[in-house]
Image 1: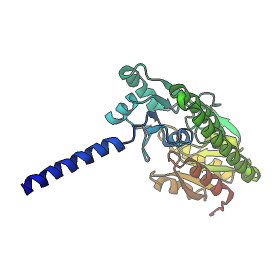
Image 2: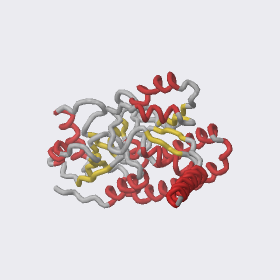
Image 3: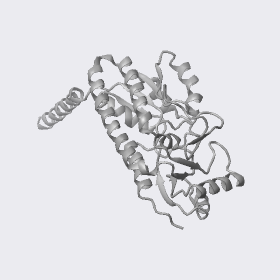
Length: 294
């Protein structure tokens, strides 16, 4: 009799715990998918705790070789919307797959309206045109205003019930962007016309914003030849480049070999990281506290 009573108590307790778990489980948030972590950061400043923002490319991923997993594509299918960054190769490669599996899914372009740079070089205020559009639109506080505005319109169109909440968050975020842009402008005012070196040409829009020169050693999606390296070294020395930005996770040995002929201070950056504001601040910190090593 005692054994039966204990068994009944255990069963009843387990049932209560199960019911409690069902009752206390929070409702599942609606999901929106974006392409890159900086974009996820910006969107989360607008959506706060109302949207589960998923990102296709993880930290350390390479957009040039990225191939979405089944889980990533499934997340897109379950999303309220997919907000692409725009002008990125892997996005073009998966759009057809997305439209085939979920033809009614709203798709938005976060970079719509950004004044694009054609090619990837921007040397000391002079644009060097190349093939295609520079996709790194997020590497600019001024562009971030446009990107945030596009994402606000996108999120309100798929979740209009929270419009006021999103509008208020957007207003606060843009105010912060304005303050950051003004601060960067003040700090970099005396550095206009100066140049920096970067291996992967990812900072063209940042350079344009503040009148700086980007000397890109590597070419976008192309093998770097000896002639290209020689020209980059020559340009960097002519413009007295003081900082060499190296992307996180890249093999720095070749960059170090090149930098022996330039003598710039090497600074590691992560332009595809989630901490977008921190990354932008690190660029300005490096350029306003730069010392030549040769």
